[in-house]
Image (tube, rainbow, N blue to C red):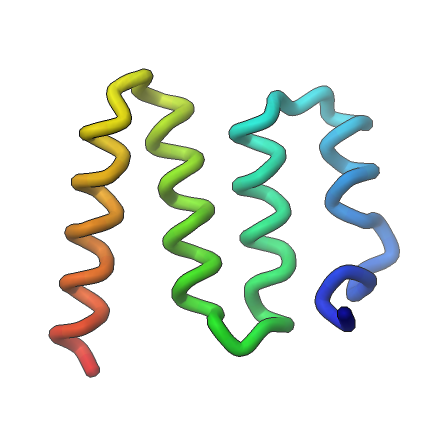
Amino acid sequence: MKHYRTTALQPDDAIDIWGLNFRLGNAIKYIVRAPHKEKYSEDLIKAIWYLSKEVSEDTTLADKVVQLIESSLEESQ
């Protein structure tokens, strides 16, 4: 898949170098790869989900944030 090798520094390498945890690492991967995939907004929403999960252990909050973003995207289309 072409979106996996798009930059000189790969997301997995950056995650290791920067010592990021699972959630932050996944957010970085989704952000870096999003511009190279068809579902750009969907990948950014996934990144936001991981980031909101990182700042709050409350999964409900993370899900609400994603729902707000998705509804906002639907309204703008």
